[in-house]
Image (cartoon, rainbow, N blue to C red):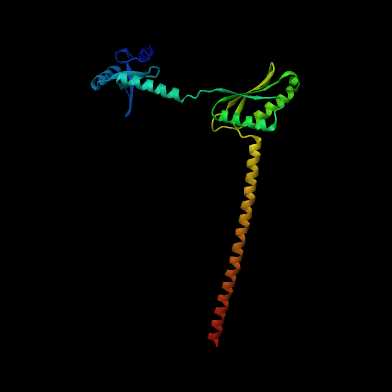
Length: 235
């Protein structure tokens, strides 16, 4: 059934009833009358296959139809294999999660996002701990901020029953926004490098000064030698 559906997806040979078509191939493309294109297909022992019916004129290829269907099926398999299945990974917190546990879960969330998965973080309020819902909201907002480089927030923290949820989706590669902490760190590193560079430059600048003294001493010696020679000549 699937193969029949694919076969019926394309018009071939006499099914193509337009006045002219564009033939594409390895050597480029050309617009020819449909009748001429059919004659070319017969001469080459292949089919005239319409691959883009909505173009003006429609685009066709000269190719064995069975081979063409095989190529299309193979291409679809490759595209399907490349599609990344996005999963939603859950991260659970308590309203009073300690720092060590927080960092451990933050690390896992980063791994999930880097793999292209979404993250659903939530704080579970057990019993009277619902009184600390503001504390849970602060925790989730901190979590979102710490993942700013890798994730975008799909929904602010919201309370659903005894759980407060935060939904995060991975950012596209290459457009991750740096957090303020990362920008501050890079600025500090750049400043430290600039100070080191200036100190190194200052050390280098001292060497030409010594070289200048040596050069001046050499010039003075040459001048004294010349003066002595002139005095001897006069004597």
